[in-house]
Length: 248
Length: 373
Image 1: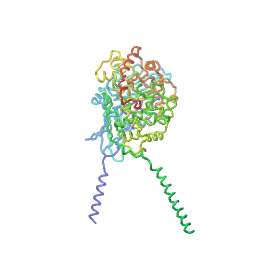
Image 2: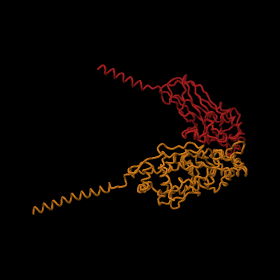
Image 3: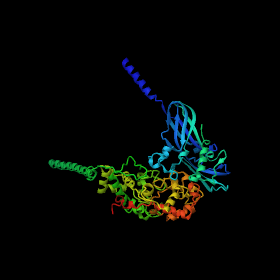
Image 4: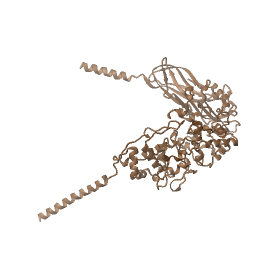
């Protein structure tokens, strides 16, 4: 009888032990948002632009390489090493909701998050034909033949320079060149525990990208960024990025 | 007397029993006599169809549940060209996708059974196997298998029921054999619309075009573009310091389309909801997608006139005039289209470049042709 009882206890302990898997789903989430001057950005809704007129934003797509989350020893990556944050921002609720990306992590202390905007040279020497169709990198929508580069960001919209309510001009900033690939590092302090969801909010402020500290891109004179002569516009956008991407 | 009575009674009982037996036998005949049901006597030995990917093209996405076989492709070709799919046996897939027009029909709007006019222009099927973001002008089908299901029951196209099509195919000795060889069906009732769509999709994935002068020069280094063609190339892709003709934003990559959905300003409405043909927006239910349509491949574009989803432009010259002079500033107009300022000479250069995308070699490919002719 004791033999059976002992066996039963050991077996139960084994089952309980097996259940105690430290890998817990979706313990850390990143909610990415496209904002304008710190406020939820609703596409097709007029917002003030520092050039002295109103604009409407129609598209914000950001190609991400990462996310990588670090504890003291490990690096945890999202399942897709490269993906696109394709914001829809149909209304305020949608804008506030943003795009949620979740990590499957072990319990523990996490100290750092990093990701790239765009892709590095190892990827950018290839083209979409080199990638399987399931990968976003196979999509020629995010590739610019003129520069033989993936498109790292797409920001599109219209402006109303004469204030008549008719948005007569458009701006189309499609950025991408290997030299512009940037990695962003953010210190984080997350103690991941089972049953507790930690959510980080990652914001891309479109006003700051176009016009940080009053140093605005002239939407009328330089409405695009895909010609070789547009390089200064591209560089301005990228110089603004560090002031435009925040994590909290 | 008694003896006679027994005899009559005996005969009566025997008669009743015989009647039941005969009824039973008749029923059995109706249910079970099916001399052509069992197809297992036909050899099923599928051989892989090896699709050779053209240089520079992406890897084609072939669904795991519809691997290409030689018999599957062959069956697909027969079904593609067979008007048996339509109500009155007048319209086949190949009626609107003709090999001589790069698998379009040369019409602004395609005609269905009884000459009924459709609402959109037939799209080219060349290199269609590489389309990964939806089919039809509005992307309402995700895969070729989904796409092939739709025209049969469309009242503006084949106007037939799938039930009838299945019945017609099941009644055909030739098709029973072909379905057996292609998919290993064991009984004729296994010939279904899903298998029809799979076979047609297999055939459509074989329809490739990659022998243009562009392929030989830019991708193959076997030829040279003329100065004017080179100028057109620079304009098209906005390389070097050329003016941007904006073509390469939507019609790029080896297939010359990124398969995106765009509003290209061919119509003007104050409110997006006023678009009579809402295009992509009808599928996504997103008003910002109203009036957007799939960017078609520009390979063989000279052979696929007329142009746009409703075939409103008869020539490529008219298309160029639209993009340079008549783009309407609608709310969701694609952002690249309003900065297009090119000279008359540059227009000509782009048109000359577009002709380098022409390939006629596929027309002589016997395996693409109508097997009934």
